[in-house]
Amino acid sequence: MSNPPTYDLSATPPGHSYTVTVKPEETSRDAWARVIKDFILFAAALVFLGILAWICFTTVQSATATAEEKKWAMSFLTGAAGGLVGYLIKK
Image (cartoon, rainbow, N blue to C red):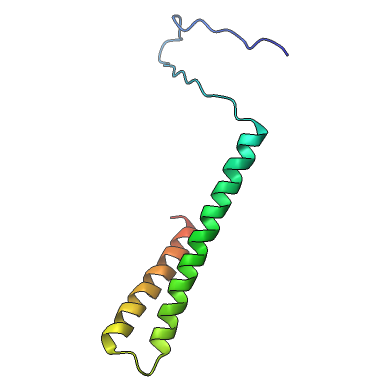
């Protein structure tokens, strides 16, 4: 392994600044644990939102649901669709 280069931080070029950060190295085991955790959280959130969307969709389609319940369900479905479009477009 070669030594990292050294820099003299007291002699920066004019018009430049520097920032120093120290980060621990992430091992492959730590990276896998982070990826698995993120995937499980994402999947759980996706399942939860899917169940809510299914409940709202069946509420909108129901003949026995009141107008207020349908209005609430449509508000959620509209927000979910807008959030999905915003996520996909990223603007």
